[in-house]
Image 1 (spheres, rainbow, N blue to C red):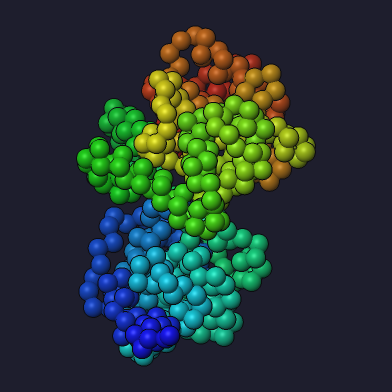
Image 2: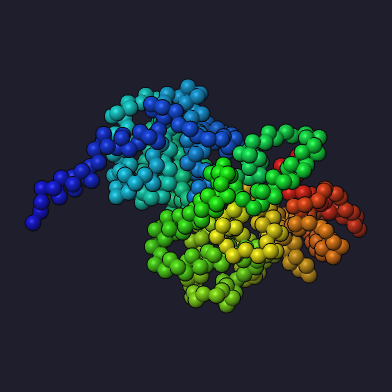
Length: 453
């Protein structure tokens, strides 16, 4: 028997009337009031400002809680300050619980219709679709708006690399620009800590001790924005642990329908504990202290990488086949999160520095490998077909043995790649330049290298 109440509820769910839609959207938008958008992340805003001059869809990706939503709101706020009418901006958060059971293309059409009926915007609309991957087939809706030459600039965000999957790319070929958002870099970390950065080297010398202390904090805390703005150390750890669990559940378990959640979490914890080490999937299966099939290790590792939680770095080889068959180094997205969830050891300081250096290189869009012939070099950076930079990472060059190990590995690699210079990045110590056999090794403190002053 069908009850009248059932019919009423089904109709309400199916339609979610326009008033309900606007009521749900209102707290997220600037239509009536300003929204606190926090500390500006200028580097990203400058890049997006360039993208505003084009018609292309702007696809913003990055790990959950890295600041994608806030940056989108900052973009809309800046547009309003530059005389774009408030009602010409529309921000939709698809993780709003009120949309939970309605996530389909029909919802997009209804929101768009309700927005035009209630706000009646005239001229170009700036549309922000946050966590859009929750709508299956969204790329076809976006392409239709693009192809119909509607007066709309579209931004989409997602916390999974598959937002830019081959299927998505084929639908929006030539119609999108990509922006990758990460947790705070060191320069942004200093800004969030209230330090005004200057570009002259005298300022660097005057503030050397202060910058060195901030660098050590950064190596421990990482760069998730809300965590850096939180002063309570226990709360910081709780936030980071929650971020980790949210990534596993919302970006992996829900998306890929993973049933064995415990084993997925065990693998993520294994990688976080053993970050900066070299592994093949076969080796993971042998050394991990939990049971997981090789197929599951392949799939789960792929999911963790797609959610931006980990990265794999291959060994450098001119042979692609050799690259595929050798161990890969694993890196973890954020030191603070890693410290909050992983088993920690006394020798982790150097690994924290190496992990941070890797993500700094990744932000610079460098093609990164490690090198290992007789000795190992942490990072080989390639542009096109040419190796252009060699970097070793060492927490401190405190003894002769460490110094010789780091420099001799770089000298070997410089000869191999026919380069004249290389770097050793340290957490502690001063900058200096060492010359051997006509080749130069520059020792650079992390704070100086990361600020590029």
